Length: 239
Image (tube, rainbow, N blue to C red; front, side):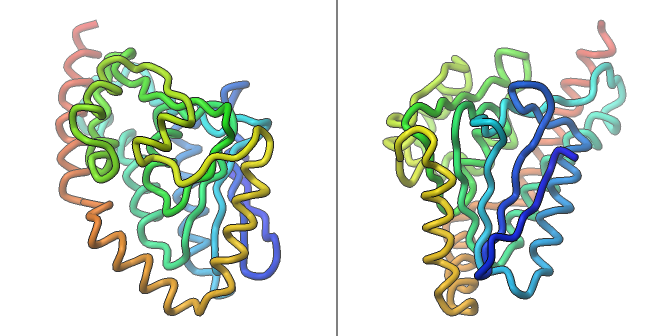
């Protein structure tokens, strides 16, 4: 299974993105499994903090969508797996900490941006690869501007260039940088500290903070999927 959950004790759990191939890609079914895992975590009354990390020093090489879909409804169903993950992440009442080693591309970039606290190794690399594949990262754009100014986000999207952890930190995507190999250890330390707070106070802080920052917009996310679905279906049909 590409999504693994392990309890660490004292109210802390870890979700590991154990994706496909060396770059730790996540396919549509993997995203649906991730959404299910996050929903399961939301029902865990003992959970106080959640860490999301990757396997083999690789956070996530990105999402791999279904190929050859020629109907907008089919493309929308495929893209909606991303929305299910984002909605499940936002619905949690506990803080979510990302522990990033290696590549955080596409979906991995977006996940890092929208968690509550992001720890990355100094040699981690980030990129919005979508436009290099002819796919505008509209879903990421629904929340990325809360962290990154429009002109910088637009440049990152159109160039698909890789940025180092230091630039990601300066842009507001990361919270802190640690030595290579230490991201998960540090994330667990932070999770332990957060888990020690009163859970009701922490839950209120997270919910109010994310609402105030407007980190999740169902309307804009659905609009993004609708626009992308028509574009991709027409392109696939033409080929």
